[in-house]
Length: 173
Image (cartoon, rainbow, N blue to C red):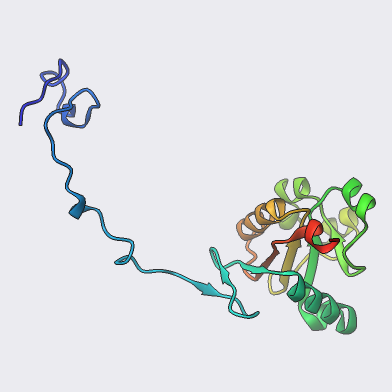
């Protein structure tokens, strides 16, 4: 086919240039169909809820079950730690979701709180740092910041992560 571009003479990449438009035909058969691609669906332990990137998204009823488990059997036995990533002022305005929930604002997580030494973490934030083998549940106001907290926790080496996608907005309504 003919290339109608002043750049064609001087560039071996002219065919890929937006200026090198010619009478090319689009061949849709070269693009794989979505039906042919493998679909990775991670299923949650709680009611087969689909998740992204191995992170379990949970709803209000599941969070209530987890809170009851932590409240009755303790963090150590339950294996869960629940973290509210809202700012301290937001928590003061609405209150905590439950007394077993710890507050660790997202900016601290983004600054590396999950990679701190255990003693330093406890001294700065007032609760024991989550262990890598614990299930860490994050929540915020509406689900955006908790999803970010999950990503930071993954980068810090945590693998068993849950994200309450309703947040405080859902919880208090």
